[in-house]
Image 1 (spheres, rainbow, N blue to C red):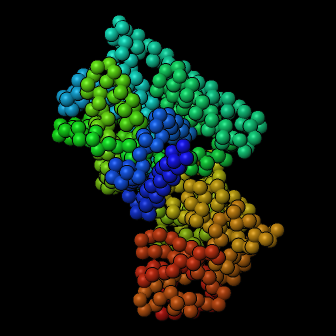
Image 2 (cartoon, one colour):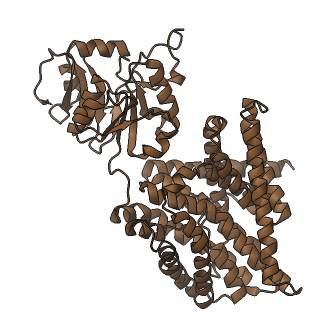
Image 3 (cartoon, rainbow, N blue to C red):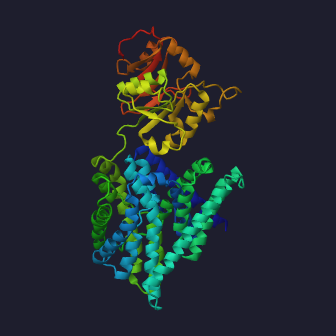
Length: 607
């Protein structure tokens, strides 16, 4: 007993280490996280035999993975706001209503004529292949710089089509099972449509119940996240009890319904659900690939390679291009969507489930589904994971080529800062809720955002993915801190800065470090300090670091009282000098300093 518990604990720890380790390496290197997680599982499983999920978890493996997929799908549904859907120009509806049937038919033809499967198994597997899945698409989009509309199309399609593909597989299997009992296709479809409607209704009612209970204080703050977690699992299990595989539809409906209720409570638990999703995606992918059996892969035949090529270069492009014909979506965006369709855990899990059931019905090709599904997952992850960035650049459907600075607050200081950075070819946008205060920036040709930066409307009017750093520079220190706290989860805690005194947390008059952004300037100048310096005529100076004029020389040349504000790396990265962080410049980097008007210009310094 103790030995089994030790094996389980060790396996769980290794799954976490390999999964999160792969995510970290992906962040450091820019490589696709899904490809690295897949590789981590293969190395830890069939190669080194460190993890054997089936042996360690036994009968719990399938329900564990199923619940994890349900939670991932629910979290994906929570990110689906109908305001974003309107930006897709009807593309998502077409990909679901037209794309799924077209993909099903074309996939079935490929499975039969190319992969050599018998018709019943070909039709079932083609239904499963309709899915792309949030477990693979969301990590892919998180690491790529895809423009807003194709990003929204791919995200919505992945989340909505996930339960659709599962239901298509169920329709085929139930018809095959009931055909021998005299059942007709119409009766099977009617029963499953009814079950799907019931499942959707269960998800919607659960969302409405939570939407009613949370704002009225019927659930305390410390229990909201656990209650939501348990509710999702309960909805998933209840729907599956009514009809197998409808649970995915129920949790998707539940997530989308909650996302469009504008509940303040969901904003509070968003970091929790995102962290849980990252853990689940990492764990599920490692478990998926660690369960890979090389004996199964030995069943791979050369005709399967032809099937993969047809799936990648014919079935998916034809499905998307036919579905999006005569839509306002530009051709380059259609082509990107037509290329990106990685499959993940849902395809493998459902294929493995139906493989066993088909064997019981006497279809020998059922065992091949596991081999084919793994081949499809590996091929699509590698092809699409490593190609999404170059393909997006080739088709010119990327976001901002260089990520810049978002300055909140139109002040003389922020206007001069933006002017200096634009001279250094750094993209800068100034945001303010006053049209009048933004007037000097507009006249200077600096991009502006007019609106309350903390408003929900900002999410759809301002693409935050184009910014690597945020600096709050209004004359209200508390407001600056609020802005930094709000955007820290999205931009990064280390990438949000503000004007304001970086006082010791023991000072009862100061905002604690946990509630504010990083202090601009290593001395932590406050708002009043900057206003006073502006009145005295302080200005910005740019210094280029070279082999002859190094960092020590730049510090020595700094006038008394002057401060280094930021460092611009050769690759365009911005690093600020703060009381807690002092980046080390390298030759070719540029330092932007804030200096008194009497500061002389040393050799090597530019205006």
